[in-house]
Length: 98
Image (tube, rainbow, N blue to C red; front, top):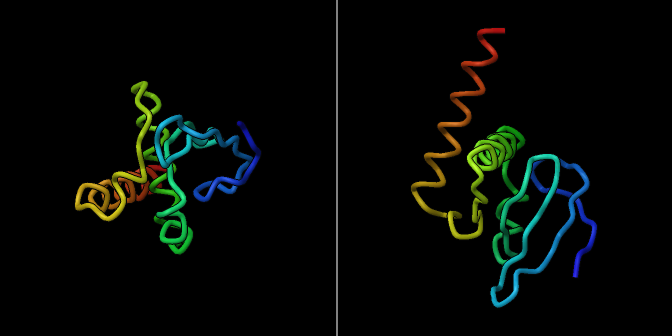
């Protein structure tokens, strides 16, 4: 079943659909498409806006490569922390060019 919601990362309208057989759901929003779960939602909501933007950028990057990131599985890992830091650096470098 699909339902409308709000994306944690971009604040845009999101369509949320359960993933059969998993304790997760798929989100489609202006960021792109990503998989998520209720059990990590509160931690993601607590992120500052800069980190949320970095996650949004990561989602867009993955979708450009036709990949759907499973954010609920990355949460709390070193890889996820690296992804946020890397996307923040890219954003900072891009803002210096403009």
